[in-house]
Image (tube, rainbow over the protein chains, first blue to last red):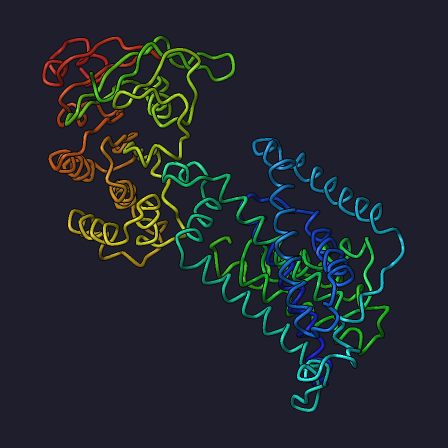
Amino acid sequence: MTQIILNGLFVGSFYALIALGYSMVYGIIKLLNFAHGDIFMFGAYIGMTCLTVIPGIGSLGIGAIAIVLLISALLTGATGVLIETLAYRPLRSAPRLSVLITAVGMSFLLEYGVRQIWGPDPQPWPQAGRLTEAANWPAGLQWGAQRIDILGGSLTGAQLVLMALAVVLMAVLALYIGKTREGRAMRAIALDKRAATLMGINVNATISRVFFIGSALAGVAGVMHGAYYSSITFLMGFLLGLKAFTAAVIGGIGNLYGAMLGGLTLGLLEAFGTAWFGGEWKDVFAFVFLIAFLTLRPTGILGERVVERM
Amino acid sequence: MSWLEVDGVDVFYGRIQALHQLSFVVEEGEIVSLLGNNGAGKSTTLNLVSRIVPASAGRVVWQGDDMARTAAHDLVARGLVQVPEGRRIFSTMTVEENLMLGGYRVRDKKAISQRVDQVYDLMPRLRERRSQEGGTLSGGEQQMLAIGRALIAAPKLLLLDEPSMGLAPLMVKQVMDIIRTVNQRGTTILVVEQNAKAALRIADRAYVLDNGAVTLSGPASQLAGDPRVVEAYLGG
């Protein structure tokens, strides 16, 4: 039981990271960014490539994962900004359906661009960056591969570090959005772009910033995914994107805390679904909850209580 | 040279021409009012100055510089700040956060908190409601908040779009008094109004707009006695 909860929280923490980007973008420009899941996938491929090509990275243990996380976050962040600037910005005043379809197009572009470069087959995650079987990690970093008991269940040290990282990232983001000048500007744009412009806010630059942050978080989640499941494919962003959307809806789309809560909730639901009905029912379980929330409570868990978007 | 010069401007919305060869000036220290009925082009004129709508002919010159290449969001840093029609306060953010956003382009944090205090002194109602969400305020309080928010940027020229709209007569008087006080403290004001009576009471000069062009202009006291203005805008 405890083990199920721990697994659920671990998976949920990276669902939450992806859902955050989904939700932030929706909050600020009311776009369901279908390419977001593919940014996550792209992040995983960048991570895999770094682990393969950077000389000597294999001897760094969890340090390798840290380096790869950083590179992947920066590159996916830049990719998100590029997509927003080239594909979405010219359509800022177009009907929402046009932008939505453009987002689907960007999703295909990323999926088949990655397939073109790395090939159609699932790619094994390099040994050096795996969380589950890092038996040959260097001395002093062995704790990263060892299982640590928590209330009768257990997670590896590296898993705990990654979960802590996800929590820290979310806390920093919440502070940034809630308390800083730039965060206030983001919330202002979400409410009224014209009024925000009249305050002297550069709306385009601020929207770019939102895309950078959201995409970078997805890149981090991509590396976490690869390190945990040990295998990645060019289509994995599709399903994960839908899951992140589900998490955002469960929490209340456009709401920052909702995305975090929704991600963790979805991770737990899936973990229990797997334990009770078997792994093949995991996705069914997740999407049944999506349908249930869309019909019974479309505003999500926090949607009504917290009116403030983003 | 005048502080603000609008010179022979045409503005189109698609095929509809909203402003026809519009020209007017605002001098430092004045309160200038643009009067006119619905659809006369008053808001378009303010949005032209704020660079929200583009001119297809003519120029807008602010302190000697042609503004044609300046982005709307950079005008705040140049001292041009608009209080938009319908107030457009950030409804789910607190009064204090709204004021902070007014200071988005002000780098000096101390200056911001000083000005927030000054706004609270000028409009004590806002201080009482500082941690309330903007959307929960009454119409008059929202108008005060919108003006206060603009003041945090320390504008040289404050553009006000229909500040009296939808307010009870007593509140109109309060808001007009606030505008006069702001002017007396050194801010030049361009105010667009349908309520000609209230506007002419505080303005130094006024322009009457009809169908996107200036039809009458002059000192406010003179216009208030002009039979054409009395008949058309002051209700006989």
